[in-house]
Image (cartoon, rainbow, N blue to C red; front, side, top):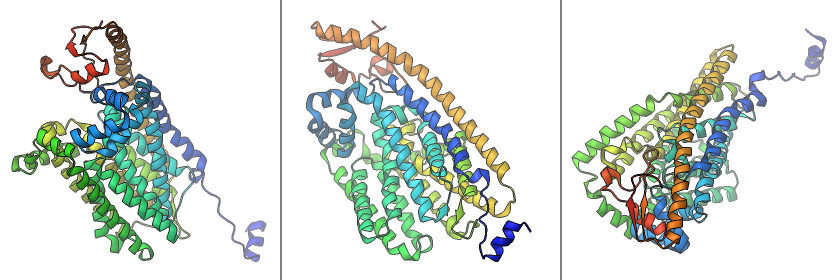
Length: 489
């Protein structure tokens, strides 16, 4: 026995074992740079974002009437989503620059909130992890959530879709942070207030995310006697019940709004529960699940979960094998995903019909739950592996390579999208200058050349018969009418 170890033994001091290099902060921080670099590249490309689709209708309303006009439009005429109106006003009040800055700012917000959520989950699970692991998981989840979609433009770059389907599930995760962190009476009161306010806001922001949130909380209540620690069980049950009640309250306010009633009339929502609609929704949701399961970049979530499971230790007892509680939580999560995803499809089917399969922005309300479940499954597998294997370095190295491959694939996809965005932005700027100069000269009928991108709604679709949103474009340029142009000016 070495002399130093003997002295430590005689003095009653047990020397602390040296951490393996792969459980230090440096390599995990370096690994985080890959998804963060993908995000930085995507954020830089946001300078090519230009108005399209619903933007044509939002921008002139905010410009001419501000927040009151936008709130009136949503609550009394469009869909009743009053919180959605506030978020749209927050970026549309800056015009075109607001749209270009929306993606970078919202992306940073997503990373920060998911980072806080992951850190809180590790804290409540008493899992010791190197400092960089929370950022690694959060950045990888963000990259997959924002850029793994078949239509990244509508998920990340298009503000109108992001405020309705991309940001709401992140806000729901953020509301869990004070709940997981609360220990004092004041902290628990603040956490409960956060849950109530977030639930009500979600109900007035996104019906689909509200369904997912309420379903997850309901399943959490069902398994609470097994999954929640006894010391915090009552508080967590109260938070779940409060979240469900406040979300339902928000949905009821939205549902009874004049805008929501008009939308149901326009979109024939009464057909939602007919046998044909329910069967069509089931068929469509099955195709969506098949697409998600066969989209290989999402395997990056399992890999990063595997890394998380290998580098964490539970308290002073070291690595532990996943038990029945963890397996029960995984099963409950999968059931919540299937139930809420199908209900979301049922809600949207009367509006989109068979297009619910191709309208990928509608998946985002439950896509984040899917990715987090993959991370959780990977973490359970990592902990099981770590409890049996003597050497985990090869697995971690393989995981790092797989994550690098996923990030390269996402970056390649973004590069192709950036090329299309650049072309459209240059054409849009040239046409915009021409239309503005004509409007300034007193011309009241302007011609507009369609500039489609990533299935964005443009006027004169279907061989010129579908003119929406031509009226909004006319209002944007302060003219009477817009006609279809054969070529750019």
